[in-house]
Length: 209
Image 1 (tube, rainbow, N blue to C red):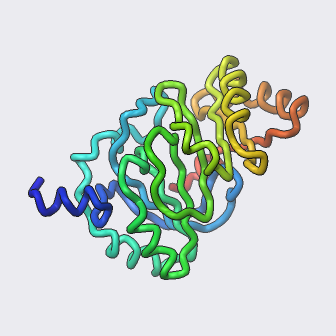
Image 2: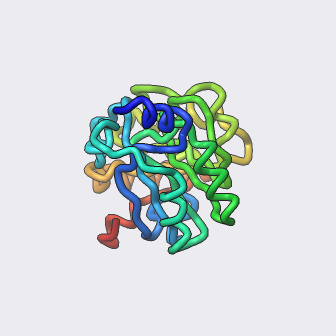
């Protein structure tokens, strides 16, 4: 990568864009809402059940000017979700400032494993055991989304819930390949622990991106 391009990436004026698309938010608190998704390449968290492993290697995804990404988003909606990969690997202040200057709400989905950047209207934190969130991230979370792959994940979810602020919404979401086994357990758990809500990957049921 040329030095001038690398400098722009380092400052967040360019980002390794994997894909961008307009769809319906499928998970968590904003399920069912239209949103423009910006998927940024690069992730070293390494979830074995990740369904976008092709996002992991940032070098495979071309650095793209943030202002071009914002221009594309403006054509569709007033809400953008920045996801990955792991989006906080990159400085996100520039792109979120541009989005908000254009009256576009900024949402993020992150593991929280990297330092906080950006200005957010909604911060969805989804911690992973393999690379835990930084302490500074927990207080930012509007939504805690815990992926339930096995029974031990309920304990991990409760440990993470103790670290977020009192206004944070709590969600348990079955890992897609284990959904038939885990959904009954999640239903029973939420009925016993009503501070939690259930999140489903409804975009997969609807067969949309």
